Length: 151
Image 1 (cartoon, rainbow, N blue to C red):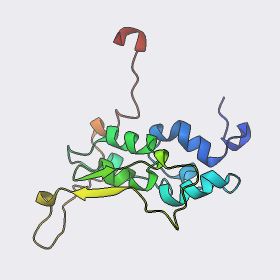
Image 2 (image 1 turned 30 degrees about the horizontal axis):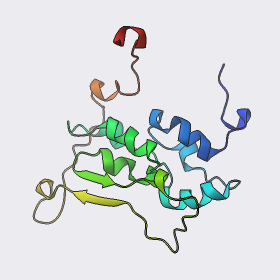
Image 3 (image 1 turned 60 degrees about the horizontal axis):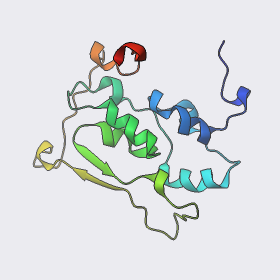
Image 4 (image 1 turned 45 degrees about the horizontal axis):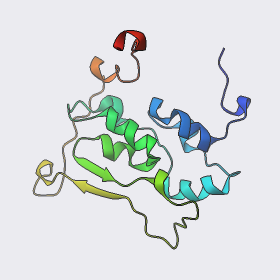
């Protein structure tokens, strides 16, 4: 059967640490963790893991869900859509911040750089949003791999 994270005693921050690579964001990713001080401080930097609509609805071939999963593993939750969109690169990792990191006193070591060639003269970028996602967008989350056969 299925259980909610709360039913098995897991709070939002540990849930995201374990399962965020399998989520498009939203729901438990947007619930603040008010029980763990470390989660509160890191959560201020990591941001909420909002739903990433581009994961399914960006028809551009440069949309990369592997990069989305990497940003999730690094606990860079608010940068997941940026890091996977295909025209930006995110460097740094919330997961590697020291335990006593204070976002009000310490510089946040996350940087974003953009592919300037993707922007027009008005500094706008075209994102090919589609109403019906192409089937190949589904496979990252909705496929399986036989580990025994993969060798």
